[in-house]
Image 1: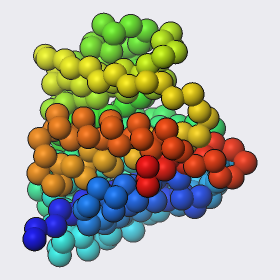
Image 2 (image 1 turned 60 degrees about the vertical axis):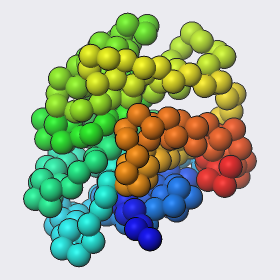
Image 3 (image 1 turned 45 degrees about the horizontal axis):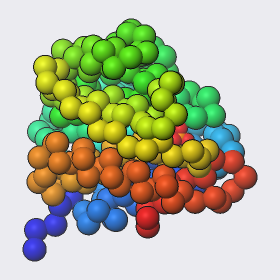
Image 4 (image 1 turned 30 degrees about the vertical axis):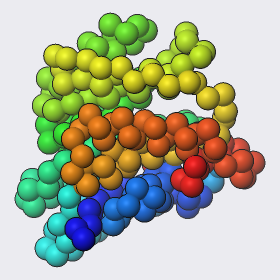
Length: 262
Ligand code: PLP
């Protein structure tokens, strides 16, 4: 049996709800072998982020070399990358090893407000990483930061998706979860820059959504690692994240994590 292998390049969440931990749980649940390169260690729980400790460029590059010289990821995702120099190192290794099926989750700020990407690194993400991406999965604030487009309508989401594809990504998914206005549903817009498709799901009224973005992008990578076409991968990931939020875990005193057994 061929086993799909997926790699996450992201930050560690000591609380286990987001980052590397959410990604590996997602890979496992979706039946692929999970690998990780850690870009930063966060001291974190359901209440928030108490500390951020980035890894050196060398430590990240060596992790990727260990994977690249032995194990061949069938798909990969990036999450928290913290700085421009780490983005450049990761992009360099993705090119060096010719890794395909890259999902870029442009993680910028945690729900509690902690900065997970330096503001000045956004330009480096646009110039170095997004051109390598199969798909970029921003939420509304991230799409606004990447494109400079203020998003308050479906048309704005389409414009932002087109702008991200013009940066060199093959596809973009603009996630509707942060959108204001519609209290009943969350609508994600999937696009190749020309053509659009919307995926609507009920808006689940809960504060226990820690790790949602990480889990969604990891699920896309897991499906791509199993050879699924991108549209199907996004559709399956949407169903997975919806179940994971509907049954989110009310643990800890703050925002509980998504549930990977759902
Ligand atoms: N911590 C790390 C290490 C992450 O990669 C992410 C991903 O977005 C988060 C925190 C964000 O968590 P939250 O879903 O609570 O915003």
